[in-house]
Structures are given as structure tokens and as C-alpha cells.
Image 1 (cartoon, rainbow, N blue to C red):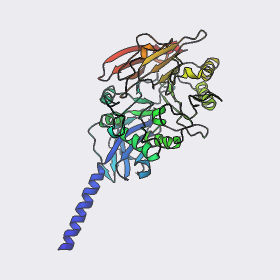
Image 2 (cartoon, rainbow, N blue to C red):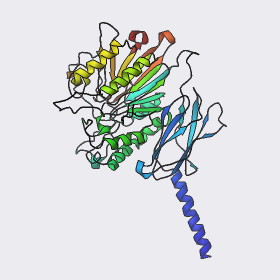
Image 3 (cartoon, rainbow, N blue to C red):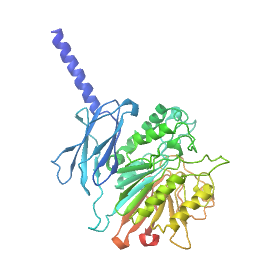
Image 4 (tube, rainbow, N blue to C red):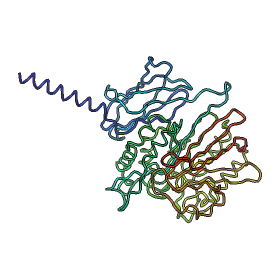
Length: 442
């Protein structure tokens, strides 16, 4: 009798243990890059587990497709990316996550969509891109004393309500603290802590997420290529984001590019090649010669109507203060001169970093103007002195000194494409809006 009782007891323990694991998602799922032939979904489990994704198109829900099963491991804080490799262009797929063969149920929709094959067939599709930067999530034990630096986490709910096709995270997507940045374990713990907040999860689960970094998710404040633990933050970035690829020509960096409709996005690395701010000798670089060369080559080859370049810090702001590109005047001039000399059309810059939002516009006498939309901050502290800066390129009426996010909407037929910029408050109220026609950038 005792043997039978013990066997039943052990069976029940194993049953509830496995059932518990089935619901033990630490954070995610998060949709990453989506292309015409494959799509990615990132998941983090609480314990090492076997994970798998089942997915089906809305038009054929009965046709169940499955990814390979992946084992999450402690060394990566149990984070892993699943690849759906049986997808078709222009299709929406609903997906389900399985942990240790147990289905995980969510209280919000989980789906991804692939870009449409429109070339030579139709006008480019309309789509939208949400964006923001500077995500600080409080953790009292490791924060500086005083009031919490992070707030208004409900902004992620407001972004989700806009139903963007893409979410661009423009740097400082987490804030490494003093206790974090000197060890791989500390860096991975900080990435985990930020990613786990509940308000973020519905947005992650149904929007394609792409990211760059800035100083705080790369290392300490104002960190540069000399940061001794940058290999660990590079590992963490790759483990927690599902960009299409990382680096170029064998360089360990986050530089990458992707296309959606008639827009090509260039995600640049403003930390891995950056000269220290206080260095008195040698080159004064931000992107570095090789990355600029990579960018110009790809801009020249691009067939996209809009070429959107995302850099952690401001490019067009004329004020040579803090970490604006204007503090690296020679390299900044080189980049802008090359864009003009190569007759590259449709360039538009995005940036974060500054803890306020503004649109800058640089008039160029021989060609079209260059814009830079700075969008910050999502949840971190707000810069209330933005208007005191002598930014000679600022577009009047675009400064926002409160938590906010922006959405770019690309709409219209071939020859009348327009990018509409809308900036929203935490609760989703429109703060300002501006239309930029593709023909203005030619």
C-alpha cells in the first residue's frame, strides 16, 4: 500500500511540476523581425525548459505549423528565439507557445505578420511604425536614493492600442545600474528585470520589435568603445532582441537593416566604435569610418522610397552639447556630405537619448532638407530644459517635455506616398502631427 501511495504521490508532484512549468514564462513572447520567408518570436522562461511555437494563418487556421523545439538555458537567462520558417508573404499568423509540451494561455492576442510581396504588383502597402526611447523600470534596491526615476509604464498600453505593425526601440531600452554593468550576470539580470514588466507584454506579443542601443543599455552613462564589458552587453542585446542580424564584415556590433513596404530602415551602432568623449588625441568618431562606409554603400544600393536611419543620439540638432553628433563635427560633416555627394534620396533620421522629443530640419541649398525626429522619453526622467538649447534646426512647436511616443504612418499610392508623424502623450492624446511627402525628400 505504501509503495502504491508513494507512486501516486510522486506522479502528482511531477504532474503539478510540469503543469507549473507550462505557465512559467518570465517575459514575452515578443515578436521580432518578420520577413517574407521567416519570422521570429522571442521567449524567456523562468527555468530551463523545452519551448516550441505552433502557428497558423488566419485563412487556414486548421493547418498547424510548428517550429523546432529549443531548450532554454541558464547561461542566457533562459531567453531564446523561435523561428517560423514556413511562412508566406503578406500573411497574418496566430501563434501559441508550448513549454515542456504544455500550451501556454495568454490574456491578450499573440500573432505576427509578414511583409507583403508588393513589388511589380501593387502600390506599396500602408503601414505604421511606433517608436520611443529611454525605458527606466524602478528597482528600489539598486536605484539611486529618492523618488523613482521611472514612471508611467502604462504608456506601453497606449502604444499597443495604436496597433502598429512595427515597434522601434531607439536606445536606452534598459538602464544598467552600478551593480549591473561590471558582470555578465548583472547585465543579463537588468535586461530581464526591464523586459518583465506586465504593461509591456501585450505590445511585445503582436508587434514586430526592432532595437538599437545607446549608452545605458550598452554600459555606464556616456559609455564608449573602451567599455571593458561590452562583449557581455553585446551578448545580452543579441539574447534579448530578435533583430534580423548583427554587425557587418565580421564586426561585433548591432548594426543591421530591414525593409517593410517602400521603406528601408538602417539601425546603427553609436557605441561600439565611439571615441571617448574626453579623448584629446586621435580620431573623434561616433560611428566610425567602416560603419559609415557600410551605410553609404547600402544607401546607394537601396531602392526604397524612404531611407530611415536610426542612431541613438541626435544627428541634425545644431547644438554641440552633451552627446549630440554636432560634438563630432568632422565625422558628422563627412556623413552628411557623402549623402549629398552620392545623390541619395529619401533620407530621414530617427534618434532618442535626450529625454525630450523634437523634430529638427536641416535646410541644404543644393538638395532636399534632412529631418531628424528625436523621440524620448518613454518612462525615464524628462528633460524640462529642452527649449533652452540653441538648436537652430528645431521645427517650431515640436518640443515635448513629458513622457511620449511617436507613430510614423506610411500611406498613399506610388507617386503620392506620405509619412505622417504623430506624437502621443502617455494616455494616447495627440500632442502634434506633421506630414512629410516623399517628393519633398527627392
